[in-house]
View 1 (cartoon, rainbow, N blue to C red):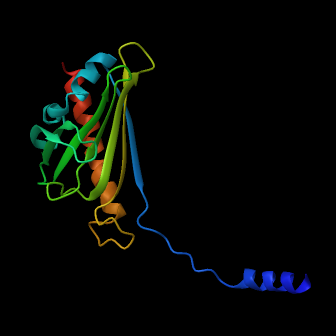
View 2 (view 1 turned 45 degrees about the vertical axis):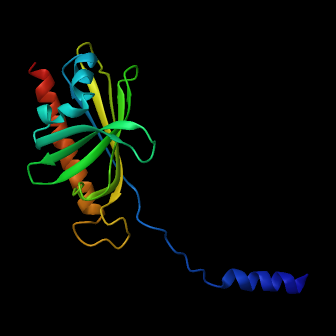
View 3 (view 1 turned 135 degrees about the vertical axis):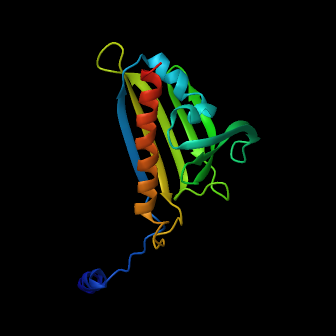
Length: 182
């Protein structure tokens, strides 16, 4: 028994080499208040092809239905072009009118030049603290564009976070302005 305990103690002293497995997932949450009733905000937000009507950085949106490889269903897809030339192709995965919540995901590939990969957004509209106020929450989960821990500059975590924060900051300004001025 003493030999066993001595061997166990020796094994515990041997350094263990830990290996990480891939990049760390990133998350950005933007919550902002809009001076409008929930239904009005939701009507504009859930119109998947209308992002160009309210997002100030969007210069073009091409909306079409495509067969989704993951679900084998036909889903709405939008190809979005930003002022800086960045593009991304997204598919609308779910719209829940009862909860005023939608879920869409970027399709990685040649049509998506934004500095992220495996990007997914959940957008939701809730009642604000007073009548006539709404709270919009945009939640993104994503990885860096290179999808690796050793990503080169421009495809790394700081670039990915910058891209999503800029996208969401502009979305907050644009959605508020579009809804509050109606």
